[in-house]
Image 1 (cartoon, helix red, strand yellow):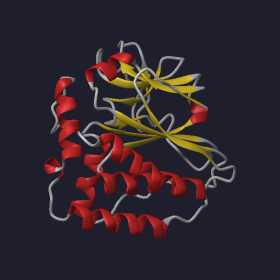
Image 2: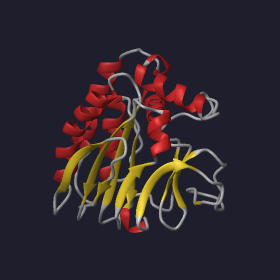
Image 3: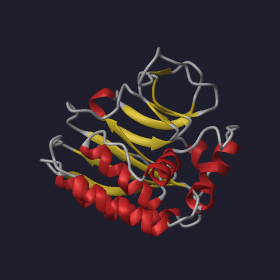
Image 4: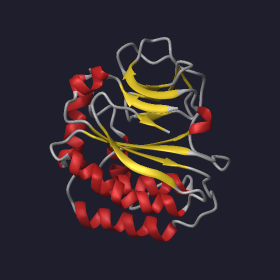
Length: 230
């Protein structure tokens, strides 16, 4: 199994930096509330009263969405949505220990992080433009077909595990109580993306390893033309 970005994604978004962590033998009962609280408060202290739209990390995603023909205020990257929720409600949703950790790290770095249950992914996961015949399963409602040209995370069976890049993750491969192994994908597009993704991996890696009975594959940063085999 492997993960990669299609070469057209790299050529269109040359500043893209992607951080990857493969987590094995997940302990779904692992207690993360203290770490989540610590990261959440660190994020609030770091960003202060700054609106999401003023953060360079989010501005870069808004420009990318505009390039893809999406209205940036209608379709927000996952990090922006979490930051808005944190600013308005003072908290983050609790879903699963691994997802909760990723969401807390996401708001700290203002970088979207997706987490996929690998038992639901066939063969590989590629970030590419949709052809329009992929199958996407939302958390509620019937299956959908992504629009031609939007960026999806697709596998070998032509199933889309996320739509509009980091905007909508599929309910089909969402991490849940039965998840044994997962792939964490963090992506950034701003000027200091590579350095910030490395810092994000340095923060998230040890936390993810703590809830993985068999440990994690060493975090890596993806590069143009490369793929992450696991």
